[in-house]
Amino acid sequence: QVQLVESGGGLVQTGGSLRLSCAASGRTFSSYGLGWFRQAPGKEREFLAAISWSGGSTYYADSVKGRFTISRDNAKNTVYLQMNSLKPEDTAVYYCAAATTGTISRNERNYDYWGQGTQVTVSS
Image (cartoon, rainbow, N blue to C red):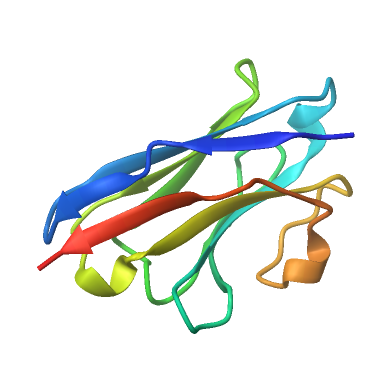
């Protein structure tokens, strides 16, 4: 069983930055593919970014490319999402997800475990 716990969400003004963290349990964290998603009220969950087990490959949605950066620290069993130049439309609950197969994808079905989510609100 893998547990994922997100943190770092909050209220920020337009143009500001936040760094989300997702701490994972499990001795094989370094073999997992990891992703970040978000879901705004009344909308479907949206893929944001993914990172391979080694951190050598990353993949971003067009909506966040150039503003968000995904990274991981396998020694700390943690994945991060650095979010810059935030906009009101970035307001959502943000989720991290782990794929025990090690693959990365924009498809939710690739991921076996999900965190509980952290709220990000960007004020105009």
